[in-house]
Image (tube, rainbow, N blue to C red):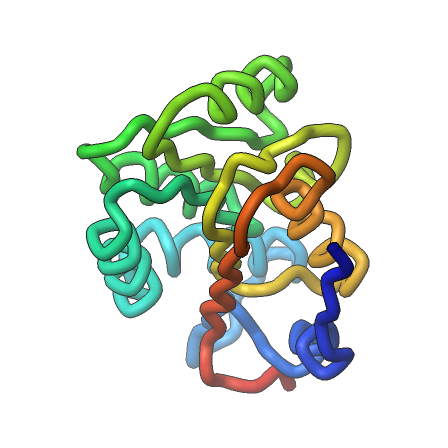
Length: 173
């Protein structure tokens, strides 16, 4: 089946500033360190409870579905992993060495949730047994979004695939 995603959806990362919160006063750290630190703090501290609440609602509303949740930061994965207690959880991130083995285990496990970073899980794995894909934010590259979605929407996928895009409401400066 051919998947059509409107170009406007693919360009959302250029107008949204997901998971980054800037302090009122400047700090002396280098900018890249500052951004990474703020991103980790914003999600690890639970400053985005609406996304987590929505994900929790999805998991309880569809108890027999398998989910793939994509995000950009390891801190988000840690927060999500700690909050999901009633389902098998698999994590694919840059810290994982055998992604294919974890993907195979996800494929074989009913009701599972696979938590992934966009970069680590966007190529070379098959997660086609999922019923739903959740993007907690969108990566900056539209190609990365398509690659991530393609992990579930592959040959061998049967039935519909639901995509949920959870975006913050503030704009990039």
